[in-house]
Length: 138
Image (cartoon, rainbow, N blue to C red; front, side):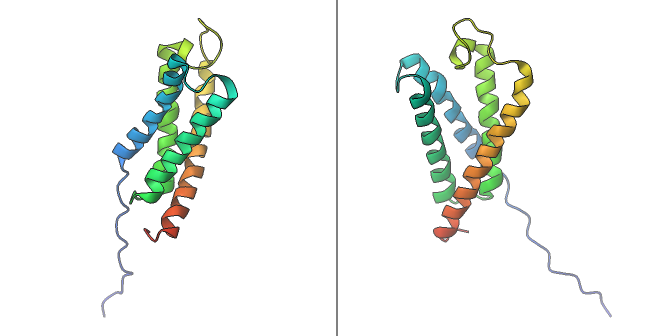
């Protein structure tokens, strides 16, 4: 008598690192709009950039055939935060924290900021997964 084994589950799709990096590059919108004065300053600019970023993330992952949308956008959120932190470290005046010549956010805020960025990415991933299900792409 041979032992019955459950059917093997297929390996999960690989993480689309190119998509993660490309979508994380949207963190460059903040310093670019700051340099050009595009979209003004303060809360209106911040909300516009957040809205555009979320719409692009959800649109690309939800309408595309991007596998593992929640994990993909969670990693995108963390990468977004890392790019933003790098920009703030290299050119603090472009980070949006403090005034000209300010040293930027304290180093201890990096981990909580990355957690928040990852949570925003996960939330966008849940919405993108819903868009995929509605479109019959999963």
